[in-house]
Picture (cartoon, rainbow, N blue to C red):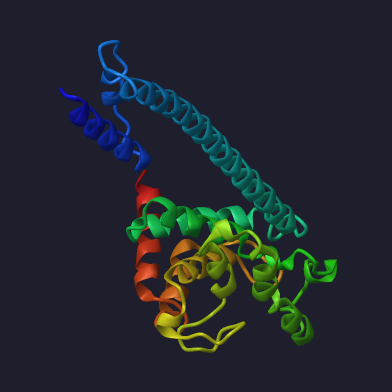
Amino acid sequence: MNAGELENKLLSIISDISEGRYSDDIMELTRNDVPDPVRTIAEAVALMMVKVEAREFQLQQLVDQLKELNKRIKENTIAVVTAMAQALAARDAYTEGHASRVAEFSYAIARELGFEGEALEYVRLGGALHDIGKIGFPDILFSSHEQRLPSNLVKEINRHPAIGVKILEPLDFLGPAIDYVSAHHERLDGRGYPRGLKGDQIPLGAQIVSVADIYDAITSERPYQETKTSDEALAILYDISNTRVRIEIVQALERVLANKDAS
């Protein structure tokens, strides 16, 4: 290969390297039989390439470490917030365990409806955190009442979805789970709260959490109502479907319960 061809090859290899296409071709031009200045330039470029690759490797390691750290921060934050939600429910003997059960039912219903991966996890988180907005409420809202809550307390407690959003908004990695917390008391007929959304304006995940929430409330002991059976709860949910909740979600819950009984 004559001097002109060697120079052209060197320029071609340098061009590839500059665009991030590394190869061992440059090493052929560092042999003793390659005349200067091609060999000297090739040796310098090869050394530079090795240093760049080493720095890229170190940078990738750092990126991987940051990703792992970020993942742990997310997991730890979710664990802390979820623990807060569970502790919140424990303020009242009648709602203790409610957040965990709603999360489990939400997850099972979503899986029955075909949710997968992250979408499934977001629904579970929405269920676990759906009442987090009650965290700052006074104890009177968690105390036992012989009858249903007075209207002034109902108005106060109806603020909890909006408060929950304010608490969770900084945790943007919660994704649509925040929308599920926000909209789990919205109704298909538009008579829900806090925004009066209706129909398809309500995220499916929020409706799943809503059904899980209602079912657990009906089948759990409360001071203002008698505990109802699963069949009675399903009958109530079917009665309010298509006005408050989607009927396909109630049907999915019924299948979940049937599979649970069969196992």
